[in-house]
Length: 293
Ligand SMILES: [Ca+2]
Ligand SMILES: [Ca+2]
Image (cartoon, rainbow, N blue to C red):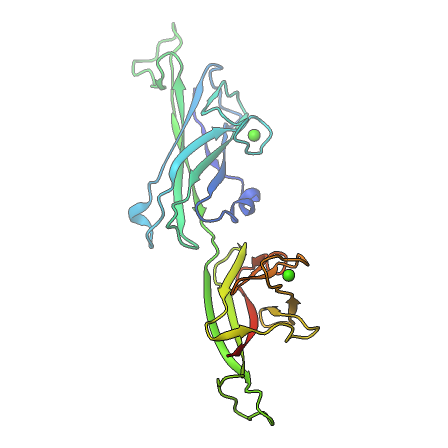
C-alpha cells in the first residue's frame, strides 16, 4: 500500500461544463489514478469526498455549491445519474484509474462568471476497519507482513464556473408621422398620429436565453395599427439592429398563421417561432405601431 496519484480532471471535457445555466445541476469529472509502481491491496477502497477549501482565499466571493455528491463512473467515461451511483472505488488495481464525477446545485442567486471551487479527496481505506490505512509504527519485522503508507489521501481541486444569461428589457416610442397633410417634419403625438414602440431585450450574460414569449399591452388611448410594415405585416423583429423579419399579430387570440405573433384583447404577444432565443451578447428588438385615438 503506497500512494494514490494526485487526481486531475480531464481538460478535454472542460468545455461541456462551461454551459451550465443558473440553478442547474453541474457536473465535474475528476480522474483518480494510481501509478504503475503502486500496489494496492485488492480489497482496498478509495473513498472520495468533497468540500470547499478556498472561501477565504478567493479574490471575489465564491459560490457555495449545495448538494455536492461524488459519483464513481461505471466505466463508460460519461456521467449518467442512473449508472454512476457508486460513491467509493473498490479494488483499484495497480496502474488502473477510475473517473469520478462531482455534481452540485448552483444557488439561485448565482451570478454570471462566479466560481465555486471544490476539492475532491481520495482516501485509501482499510476495508477491515473502515478507516484510512495507517502505517505499522513498529520496527521492521521480517517475520510478518507490515503496512507502509506513503500517502493515504490525495486531493484534486477544480472549479464550477457559472455562466448565465442576463436579460434586460427597455421600451421606447417615437412618432412616425402625425398623418397631417402634408405631414409635419417634426411630428408630434397628437390624435391620429402613428407611434412606433420598440421593446428591446438585451442579453448581457454569457449564455443564450430561451424566450418563451413576450407580451405587452397596447397602450391606452391608442389602437394597434395592423399591416403597417412591409408586406402588410404587423410586427417587426430585428436582431442586433440587423434586417427585420415580420409577423402577423391576428386579433382575437388565435395565432392562425402560427408565426408566434397574436393579439389577445389589447395585449400583443410575440413568441416562437418569431422569437425563440436571445444569444449571449446580443439584443432583439420588437417593434409595433399604434394610432393615437
Ligand atoms: Ca458513466
Ligand atoms: Ca400570427
